[in-house]
Amino acid sequence: MPIFENLNLEFEQGWCCIVGANGSGKSTLLKLISKEMKHDEGSIKGNDLVHYCTQSTEEIPKSLEEFMMTYTSKAFKIRDMLNINDEWLYQWDTLSFGERKRMQIAVAIFEEPDVLLVDEPTNHLDAKSKNIVITALKSFKGIGILVSHDRELLDSLSQATIIIKNKHIFTFRTVFSKAMNEHLINMEFLEKNQDKQDIELRKLKKSIQSQHEKVSQSKKRMSKKDLGKNDKNSKTKIDLARFTGKDKNDGQQLSKLKAKQTKLVSNSIKTDKVFELGIEFHKSSVKNIFPIVIDKNILELSDTKKLSYEAFSINEYDKIGITGENGAGKSSFLNHLLSTVDLKNEYLYIPQEITQAESKELFDGINDLTNDIKGEIYTIVRKLASDPIKLQDSLIPSPGEVRKLMIAKGLLQSPSLIILDEPTNHMDLDSILSLELALKEYKGTMIIISHDKTFLDAIASATWEFEKEEDDAFRIIY
Image (cartoon, rainbow, N blue to C red; front, side, top):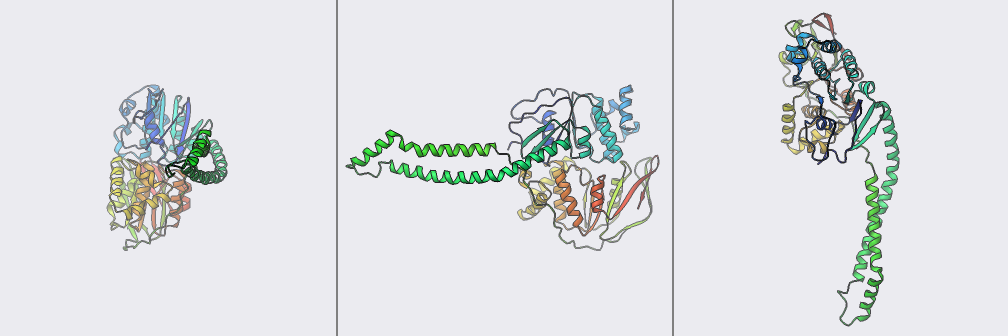
């Protein structure tokens, strides 16, 4: 099944943003432009010198060492602009995802490509890092193509906007927010006319059915098959009707009706499927894992970086939001918690990033489940604003869809504790809203790391701040 048909796009100097639901083909379009993926038909021109910043920071950028070991004013300016430390070159595995993302973008700008493709650059970034990245991307003078769900970033960068809806491509020569308003007005107009169109199509269907019956009757009347050999009068009448073309009128009228139906269907633009949002949680059977008591400790984050915290407890029904700048040790702390506390497999943990190998293993594992369990998983996915049919047809889901599958599969286990590390990363706006509504209704215990203040404010009843004390020392403020 083709992802795009009759696609015709043109990109000019400056930033163009691409928005659409998870799985709509945004990342696929970037892969086609970057030549990472081959197209079956058509051609792409002007993409000879391209740099593609993928969503994932799993891989070390190929030119990282060259960039970090270059001592020109340009390299120094980029490192300074993105607040990159020299020692990061040999610390990739211990860097936060936000720090890796800044390194990835720095290398891209250093290479000075004609076309810079950036896929979800503000995932994992705190407010300070996001502003740093926005400033850096604004400095790029070539053709920039941005995929993101970050409204602040989209409006800060975009000069043109592409919206992908139900395989239809809508282009606007304006910033994201204005383009979206214009698109919504267009969609409202289309929806108002959709009812009229549906009524007309239903009438046409009835007319076509009625005309089919007329054609069938006409064929019977024009047939000599059941006439007697000596019934010359009837045969003469049939020959005369055929000669004058009376037998063709019904058929011609049927062809006209079908042509009108085809034209009406082809000229219509389908609006997006609207899925019922909101997840119903099964009541968890708590195996007495609460309260979870943690003693005072100092956690070694790296050779030089430390995180200190006082003794604390996590009680049943707590909803804890965790905030703090990139590199403060938030994810490391959660991993330490999971490795040192016996939670009796009564928890659901969704990490910040999921590798391609893990994604494929998850997807294949779900496909091997019974139809009943698989159906329950895809019901939850649908309520997180994704189309299950389209998802099952894909070879490997998008990062946003993988996250939804992990959440759906985990929720079926009715966990006593849910731990989510940046759950809104890679998710489209409808999915974020659906997840927010669901977690607000969840009656169990939660720990959520997020830089999305609106999301956390709606869910968390308590906040832990990972605060910087000295150069490489952090502490948790409860």
